[in-house]
Length: 254
Image (cartoon, rainbow, N blue to C red; front, side, top):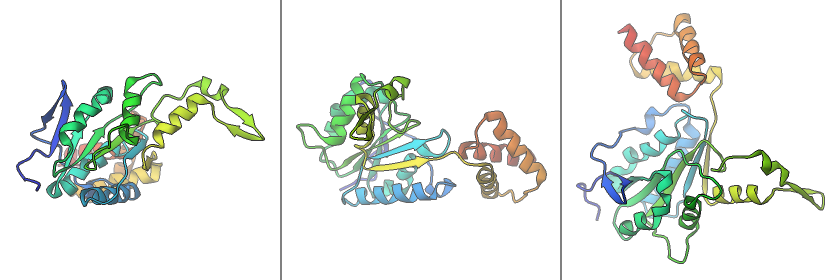
């Protein structure tokens, strides 16, 4: 039985699970422009919470497009149904067996949240993550999933030398060992969600929607011009930048 008094979120720090007294509250409805990704992760998480088969998830793509926010929004959507979030820094993945051990057998369902994950080919965290995703000698607990976000699709840096390893076999091009290693890691996640940078029209539509949510219905040429300038100064047309401009513009006019 899941008790309402148990913490909603934890972080792994100094070799221990520490409760987070004030977890960030993000409702899925507030995340705009990523409806397809949102629906997929909500459905995967719903199955997990209900004890149905579900997949580890890898969210990759441009910065500021809502990857981390979407993972954290799962807590608002399913926290009352027993979902718990455990934030694990990428460099602490070598501690995965110790992190998972006290969670096994609990009534709650735990998502291990690994943000901005990228490792070098010889990083010990790489083997620890592979073991956790595929299972080693020990059967992985059925109440734990891993949701990772990364700016890299294959989780490891792409090097120029990787191209030199490609070779032809019977007229087909095959990747080298380094590339295979990178692909094999990302393929261990059953659910892949890609987040693309927004074009200008999509960015402006996000700005307009965020302004409306803030109660600001104005949409004129000045607002549009300022929004584009805001994005240009930050060299990014992301959902994060659109929301930041909306807060700035709406607050300025209040």
